[in-house]
Amino acid sequence: MRRSTAVVPVLVTTLVLAFTPVQATASADPFYRYAEQELAWGPCTFAPQPDAVPGECALMKVPRDWAAPDEGRDLLVSISRVAASGEHLGSLLLNPGGPGGQGTSLPGALAALQPQLHERYALIGMDPRGTGQEGGTAPDQLPETCDVPVGRPSQRTDLDARDRSADSIAEHLKLPRAIAEACQSEAITPYLTTWQTAHDMELVRILLGEPALDYLGYSYGTWLGAKYASLFPRSAGKVVLDSSTDFQGRLQASFEAWPQINQRMFDDSFVPWMTRQFPEEVGATPGEAAANWERARRFYASAGTSPDRFDAIFTGMGSPLRWVLGALVFVLGVRGANGETTPPSALAPQLDATARAVFGTPLESLTPAAAARALADDPADYARYPATRYAVACGDQQTRSAAWYQRLSDRQGPQHPLYGWQYGLSEPCAFWSDAPRQPLPQLPAEVAGRVLVMQGELDPQTGYEQARAAVRAAPGVSMVSVADSPFHGQYGFEGNPCVDGAVTVFLLHNSRPGHLTCPGLPLPNETEVHPVPGPVKASPLTAATVTAPPLPALRESVRAMISDVNAPPAGAPHITP
Image (cartoon, rainbow, N blue to C red; front, side, top):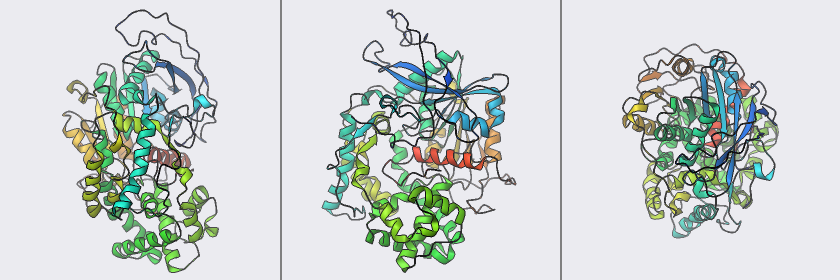
């Protein structure tokens, strides 16, 4: 097994710990050997992001298997803390999602952007088991990976899931099969699950000495938080689930919904936005823009970028930085199809920053051909995959068969061609043979009154329908919908006063709203919201006048991180702000 820092977006953190050994005695309590260790909080070995509040760090010893804590080697889990600046109200554990996202940098960022929360809460970060230590470079600090031999995936660089020939389908299935086999061959894989991580969270609560642990989780973090509250209902405090999975149903269903929710976001929000921002380049109507997008797709294919990779760039665009990347690739592709080489002028500062971050060259030097070369498939990209991502996604619950996923591709492709053809042929869970080890209960009624769900209407990474289904299946849970929002992660970093106010009041004053619809914010480089048809009725609230929120660089960095850690690892390239 090899490990690589390239698997998960790294922002910050290496942690320090000393613990006091506890004499093991027979006990039915799985925590007895671990509950009295002393966390040695100290300076973190990473430099906080600019403007983030510095925190302190430690390592926590946990058993490999909470079902048999006396067996197997112990693991170390990284945690971080930013203490309350005022009177301590409680501890709020944060998770950015994934599965497999490192979260020890989140407390410092949230503390800077939400000073009211920082005043009363100790903000706690955690790098879940299997993800290593955020910012760490030593071998024992790196994420666990599934290593796929370079020759196992398809060697073709022209893969296009729209090609439904037997040869094309067989070539597509090589990679997910190889990932599943590689991940299941790792000895640690059975212990990288939500059930195990939820027990780690309970140990965090015990070691912090808190009677209850409040929680804020994004994306997959909503599944994790709901399952923690389900397994430890007496320990869970107030629970905020932002950009939610169907935590009462199947985790895999959230991934299976990607074709539908990405097609909706692309057609109803992104393409119209492109016609407003770049009418001369892509067309002034959605129909013209859609036709030009197809022309750009053909241009990149002719220049060595597989159509599958091109399509993936326009899926999971859950942050403004991902939108700017999509805009840049789109416009350059149309220019390449037209035989033009001059760069676009609209959104020039944002496009230039993205060109430098993703392609390593300023916008003025980035030609369509250069972009195509940079996006072309590299077989080396297929060498390593994040173990926690697949161990959790495929190991939490029983999986579907490869034949089932291929039929899903056949159904979704005609309806949602952006990603529908591709998804069912790229899911490693289709080849997962290990059965789940522990059942995950549903949210009990006694906890529902302490849970608040936040959800954007056009979120392309966790669909609105998934969140709504969870809320309907858990009577007593409240939901805040954000009309017309196509972004992933609503609280803390968007700058939406309606959303931030609802969550902050709930956490600080225990006043939870009922079902509420907040107005969305304007899209990048726009000053007004352009409503689109969708599952959310228009908000009765008047959109607030939003001035430029403080610390924009920090906000955009965290928003991009939350989107990226919840995107398919084989998708579009990550943006480094």
